Image (cartoon, each protein chain N blue to C red):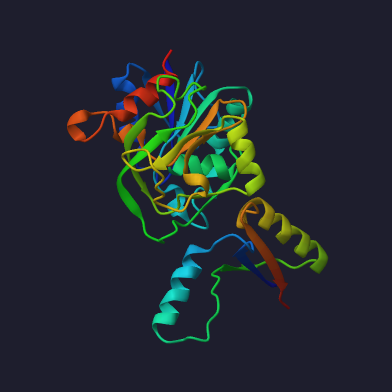
Length: 223
Length: 80
């Protein structure tokens, strides 16, 4: 299992992401954004969290034109698995691999805390080890995580089982930290090979550090 | 030539920053304010060969990078 973690100027979650996948037994390569090609035998590309290009203009607006991104887009279009976490999710939206866009959090604050999440769909690689209705507790840390999509498209997301996680409280009741449409925290594309989420599963893989709920998520990608 | 690009969230898309500033203005007793929308302004200095061509190029810039047309609209003011 070969995982490639793309690193952009301003990325800051690449080491945590590498640590998480190595702990699960994958071999992990950090790939600088100037590379125009992915290494041979890449099974999964992860776009990690951070503040690529200082979040200038809009989060991830500039990262989408990095040389490595054209390789990632081509890889995704050929059916390769891509996971975008936080700023990586924003890159997937900006490059239109996933539908919708991110706005500033509703309360305009940067939010950094543990957040409960509910599994909405598990009929995909990413969440196949979890059951529908499972509640997870995973850190979120973002200023622009207010997911927006229009009413017609949000309906089709649910119909096509593309909504994977929603924000909730510890009992699974509705809770919305950032204003996202329909409390959406994680989604995938129609072909179910491109995944994006604002929460950080790679920060929840050691019980002693608060939560290991991220393990069951990331494990879904392992071969 | 100077070209000014104004970018705003689309109408109907809630603007969290605008809302926060609106409430702050009300707290300061500027009761006449009915709504606030915050956008951004990008000022370009462009080599000017042909106004029409420049406008077309700036439109392309907006579509590709400067605005996210999923949630934003843009307008272009051509200077002299």
